[in-house]
Every structure is written in structure tokens, then in C-alpha cells.
Length: 229
Image (cartoon, rainbow, N blue to C red):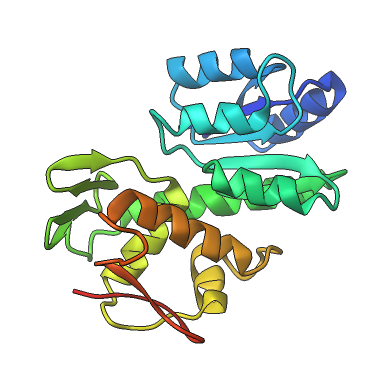
């Protein structure tokens, strides 16, 4: 079954080029040219990944990303202005999984996109791990990729789930930010360790009763992060 991608950009030539290239690789591609259209399509369809530009008419990419996160954990790659670190950080803050800077090489975009889909799918397919793990009031279902705290479902992004899953299945093992970046995002990922910090902070805000005094995801100062059973 073909992987389904939503491409969102107001520059129609860019969308046309991305669509053509992805379709050549067997992807099924839907396109949107403003934020409202993108949000509507994301609500009405199931996508394997969304490629989302920051600068959009009607509703910018950050707002679209944030609203999608209210109902879906679909992987999202943001397209940001070259050298604009704030766009990259904001994208991650609003729930994006990755970013690509403009102007980009379409081969790089496809490589990132395929890597994220591959890692997401492989996580779903792993049958050698426990299907459900419970620690305190945290319940993690690795088959459905759902997390509950005290019986309430917590909506995590794909990367937030990946980070938590790695830590949960390796309790008390301290991972440096560099290790987490390499394992969860992949060695080919060109981002920096701030990406990890943003995701850990967002994860704590979702699963911890008091993020400043975490019960689950702890910091070992000067070393990294770990999960405490």
C-alpha cells in the first residue's frame, strides 16, 4: 500500500516539484496551498507524514502544526527559512518531528521523509517488545503507540513517543543528548542537541504532574536523561 503524504506550501512550483518527485517513488501525494486547507485535509485523511511550510496564507505552519497535534501524532517535517534558528526551534516546540531549510535539495527531503516513515513503521512492527508496559500511573501501549497517565490518554508526537519508549525500555540507563539524537533521529540527522532538549521538555509537560520535579524522565546533570521506574 502506497505511503500517503500531504505537502503544504503556497509556492505552487515547489509543491509541483515535490509532488512529481515523490510520485516517482511511489508515494500518494495530496497538496494544500494555505494553512486552512492543510488543516482540513489533515482532519479528513490519514497521512503517513506531512511536509509543512512555515510561511503560509490564512494560517501559518506553526499554528497548523499545533492544531494537528490536538488530534493526530502524524510525523510532521517543517520547511523553514535558511539559517532561521528560531523557526526551527518554534517548529519543534509546536510538535514538529523534523525540519528542512529552504532552499533544499529534493533528494535530502525524500531521504528525511523516508527515514522518518521507516522508523515510525518499524516501531509499530516490533513484536519482540512487550505490547504494554505500566510504571506507576503511566501506561504505554507500544502496538497502538498510545500513552495514558492515570487513565487519561496523552497525545504524544511520533518523536516524543520514540524518546519515551527508548527510555522506558532501558530504565535508569542515562542517555546523553548526542546518543538520543543519533538513536531517535538517526545519524544522518543534521540538527543539534537542542532538538533533544525541546522534546524532553515537551514530553515532561505532557506526562509529569510537575515538570520541574519529574517523576519519570530525569536529568543527570552534565550527562543526559534517564527514565526512573
